[in-house]
Image (cartoon, rainbow, N blue to C red; front, side):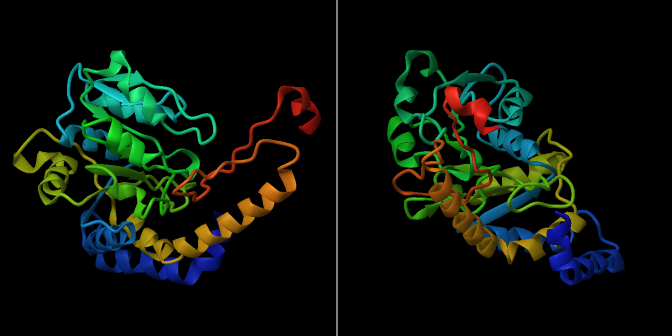
Length: 282
């Protein structure tokens, strides 16, 4: 983070100073412009900035009418925030297994009897690798709300990961590929009515519904606008480094697999090590 700031210091300092000079810190022009730019980056019609990735997924589930005692299908090998968001709306997680090669949702498991009464599906694009959205959409007619916390810029087939479902949740936690200097998140959708509903929900409901206090602030939006301009180049560099790791480590460990139709953004480079060499490798 420090190195990244030093490289972008003039632009980031200027962006922060612009907000301070304006004196408008909540839902001001920086948020609006970032939402437009992030929506364009994702190929979507709408992006709505919120307070964190966890709140993004919570609001997304609320927006597709998931509520108390509903079941939501997701995977067990995700960060706790995914299941936390499900619980935040009073729903219950129903866990299905993952593919051993990509660590993402095994779409074939969506036919299991124990999830037939579910209200929504939350695939997780873990480590920056897209889940198999072709199969997931074929296997279920439930609303799909994607956890894209680690997948900024990832592509499945010809579509960015944010476009395969009703709504997608992104996190801008500082260590993410696109990270703020504090918490932040966004929801992405092509549905105008859903986007309006999400805007109400993030800002106390705006008199329409009981909502949340979850707004991306101006300072974070200003910083994210700067970083977004560099994200494609950073991703290309991550992929170059991952390819080098694959070549150097391929004979020693199980390196990440990039599945068919997937474009991995390598938020994390995760290896699998056989037990008999684990200690020696460390």
